[in-house]
Image (cartoon, rainbow, N blue to C red):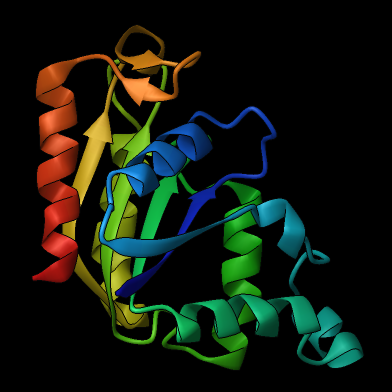
Length: 176
């Protein structure tokens, strides 16, 4: 059984990307999926001075251990001003100082969503471009625009059948 690590690259307790990645996890029926919350890995703002002071924080090591223990990774990226959320970028920076190949050559599917028409495409494009440099084997990506029009928040699923089929297709690439 494939072990998949899933998380939203957001610290919002109302994260729409957390809702999307949690739903996507339910579609991986033949897998054991662990959905993490980035709030459980909150660290001081990375700087070389903090690194000298703190060394390698145990929360960053714990996060990397979760990646190590997984067979594949599923991330849904929140877009903050066209880029990564500060919470994700900070955790990533700490982790990259411990292991520059943060994603450890794991197969990945990268997701994003936003309330608007863009579907957080800017941050998804950044992630797609950079992941291979950090040991990410990106198999597919999926961006969902108009989150509140296309996602049934009450039932935790995508309402639009075409969008849902596209997500299922992307997720199917994890085992390839």
